[in-house]
Image 1 (cartoon, rainbow, N blue to C red):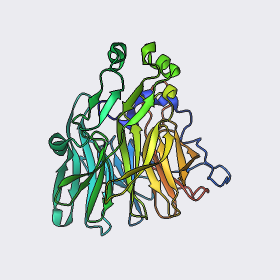
Image 2 (image 1 turned 120 degrees about the horizontal axis):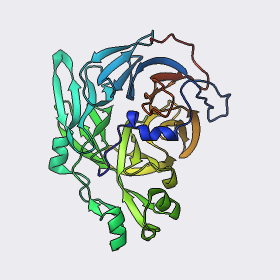
Image 3 (image 1 turned 45 degrees about the vertical axis):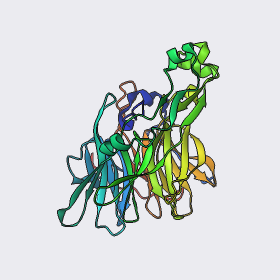
Image 4 (image 1 turned 180 degrees about the vertical axis):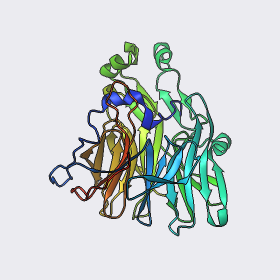
Length: 371
């Protein structure tokens, strides 16, 4: 994508949009139960971009410490994979024989490496190179992004329309059948990866069209000629989960500025893993960075820029939880877990990254955490 995915956990500019903190966050279930505070189980993380539940344990891909770890009962994080540079996603195969994590190296100027690292039995290690695959295939090259106008004034302000660029940012991963599905925030696509490291395109996410309003033009300092012009933003997949129905569920950010004037434009899609067919099932999220699916079918979406978790039932979106810097959510079969990032904005109060737990509208028992 043209605008590289913000390193979500450490984007200081976003902090001004968030007004609550983990210590003061409140929640109410969609059924209207009494608000409560989520319980902090650990504050020993920096950027817990993704959580994974395996054999009752909570695993975390921490992009701040570049490690994959597992939550301990005292709140500490035991490292299971060190030197996982650029990690953001973690998953385990159902049979427990394989563990996989995503990684991306580089910055906004250039991504130099990205992919999925797979660890298997007998010390087997495989790397699936999604950047190399993107350079060879570029799955969204037929999609057109940018302004739907050739007016010189519009092009001068917004740039010309363009087709999908070569970019890879393997962000999240889910175990699927005998392999994996990767949400690639640079390629704007879902990839399947087998345990030999072979990459294939499963689906390309559709562009996010937005009609520029007078308010948005003023907010972004755009000339009046852009008002009323539709701009096709790139869809940026941030998480993928497998539902009980066998379908894949995907959150996306719009590949452009996260501005209050532009509104909440994140989306939730359902993808048929057999055909690659895509259907939008909810929208209106502000920084949809992660999702979790509960046993009753409720889908929880982490909205980083809103500092909130929303609950989606039958396409209807309701606020579930206010939580500062929330970046990840996961369901353990009985309870919802969430990860929040450190706050690096010097104008805002310093807060640590955390892992918190919420149980069916009631707070779980407190656990001492390591400082």
